[in-house]
Length: 89
Image (cartoon, rainbow, N blue to C red):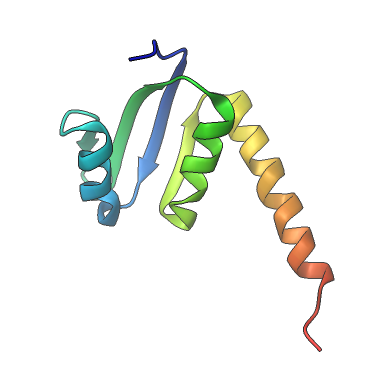
């Protein structure tokens, strides 16, 4: 097991619960009053974290770390630009 260097805090939709349990166990999140899941974990690699978060599409919001949240925002904006500029024929 590699030591986690990135303290991750994210808010997941309830539909993601079983995937979080399978990948991180039952103690990786707390259920919020609104049904969302407040996730806490250590992650070892920034690029893998971003890729993993993107697999949840619009079912997750990264809260911390702020600098990775900003990087994720940039990735999403740049991806949107690709789809905005390539119109279907």
